[in-house]
Length: 110
Image 1: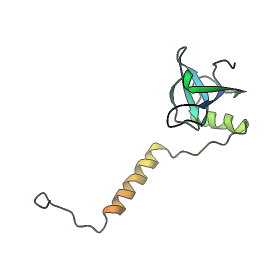
Image 2 (image 1 turned 90 degrees about the vertical axis):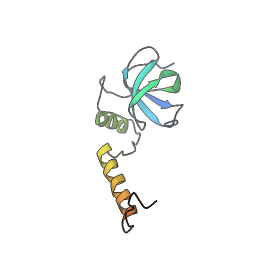
Image 3 (image 1 turned 30 degrees about the vertical axis):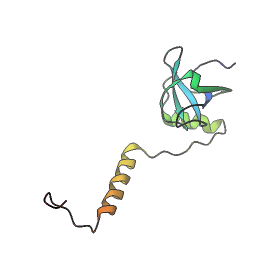
């Protein structure tokens, strides 16, 4: 069995990121690790990960960009994620486009 160590390649087995590849970025205790990659960067239970034999060359606490580079070196493509501010701006634009042209309701109109 592969050891739980920083840089170990894994596949998420549970949750909304199930089936996606990730890398262990930090070990928090014997049951939990910090993961990043095609998943959201978050704390994960080791029981919800399938550890793979490959290991990426990253340091403890590596940034998302370093994790992406290491995964690409292993031949794994990483899905591009928009930064949080860009997602917020896109949602605001979508909301404004939806309400454009509609008259605004007052408190007396319901």
